[in-house]
Length: 258
Image (cartoon, rainbow, N blue to C red; front, side, top):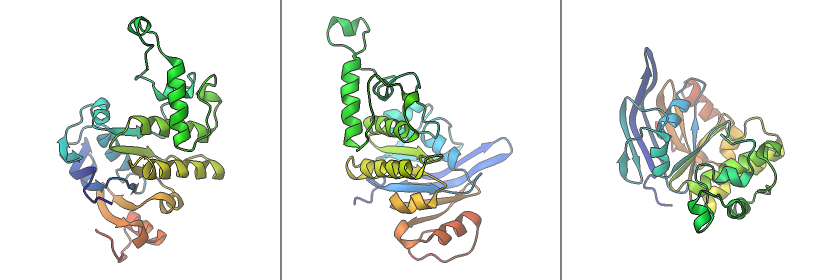
């Protein structure tokens, strides 16, 4: 695997009045890897994720995407750089079909005069959404069924497929298995593997579930009190090692970088 990072975050800081949320965070995500971002509540995970997504601007530090330093002032800047985000609430329109959600804000238009007049090609969006979901191994209807009628796992599949469709550099996923059952969790983890293995995309996985992390992640970075305290290959750490890093326990972890 090419070790040159697709995303490099260096010395990023962010404060909200008297609260220092990030205190110089470093993070590297390599091409084609699932990189877990871990930390206790208040560690700074959400703030860092929002900075990478262009929702929040950092006070200092740098962000480099595929070798080019970037400055995100809005989410569309991050999207233009190939970064897509799957938030915990999924940001799906419940009254639209999965196909319509996949192209929300990026609708395919009818060919010719009808397209110029603003007519949307729903049939084409449904076909492409079906192919996108099938390519990720998801069995999810894409036409004539509104998203609100889908199961939790199917909704997650639609959100992941949308991110995989438009993301060319990195997909960020915020607690993708939260509130899902065992079978649905397994399906979502399989989606993550397929995004990495079959699409070659990098995934930054924010999760509190260490079993999920050990199931799909290649490497992990731990934040504590707004600082990155550990980056390691998953194969070099145990559950206790990661918990110790998150809580401040002293443990020597072979192969890890503090």
